[in-house]
Image (cartoon, rainbow over all chains, first blue to last red; front, side):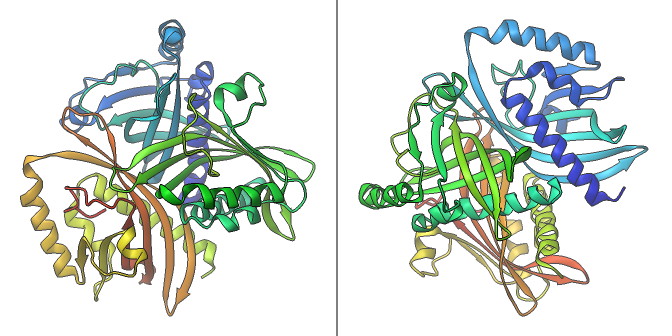
Length: 158
Length: 158
Length: 158
């Protein structure tokens, strides 16, 4: 598979992924990952750059992701907000075995009830994507966010 | 026409559309729509999700769009601002007759004179696109914005 | 070279360019430009629209760019911040000799230590791109930003 086709497929994966989150269809979120030992991690740029593994959120299986979704459904019921993602600068940066390494930039905006839309979070996605039966899936997704402070709402996947 | 080609064409349509708005060339705005019975609507996510049809702006013909442009030219003369759109996550979500259904995310930033640039509005475009003589045109464009409040400047198309 | 291939190549150039800046690898920044007489300019939309040439930053050679990088390394050491770019609406708008004229929208977000992420700057890139040994390079890059005020940090390339 040539790298430009990989990029096209991964962009479609990322587009579907962020629309899923923006629609609040969190139950479908784990489906974007491989079945076996997917890694999902949210970590600050500061910790990432220092090589620290102190993640704000860390899931190492589909089961942990599903638990996270249950937690979201319980936690955010009293503070509804709308999120909106933009993803850009998608680049295939390498290949390791059957996994493609992908880097991209993201920005997330949020709108709380009766408030103006604000910048919620920006950062980089450091992804590894494999093709399962022809369909791209994340085997690893690390969200490196630019803020030092942890936004209070970072209980949700980004 | 395969769906990946449709997506490429629609992305070019959307890119030209937002650059037209960002340049303030509102007189050209109706040209992005079909001649016959185009629909343009701006509606809050809350109303859209509830199935309410209470739109913030609604045009159902080119004539209504042209009237809107005249209104803009009269209304905004005293409060100049610059807008800047980013569109992402463009997806072809279906097909109905000769119309392709397209969903995308957008963010609009605005800069008032002597102020900092701010997030003006984020949301989704729910578009229907047909090809007229080979060129893509919107037969329907529904802008579903994330805020509950109506931004004061929402007299302008997004 | 057909224009859609040009667009694809230029998008990859832009994606690599913004990731370079976001990673803070400023020493690599001049490499995105041609060797001979590259132009890099940051100018406010107001000055640009009036035809004024009063630029906030102007480099007309690789040497000037390299000097700029040295200045950045000296200047920003006490106020670290993270930047994050999104680029959209990339369009090939013309061709002049062997140079392609490209227009795109950008938004830059910044995160100062212990602060929330904010919109730093939005605007347009007006680029001219040539292919050198098959690789796209900027022969000219003009950053037209939407604010009237000059952000204090505009010592850095965008």
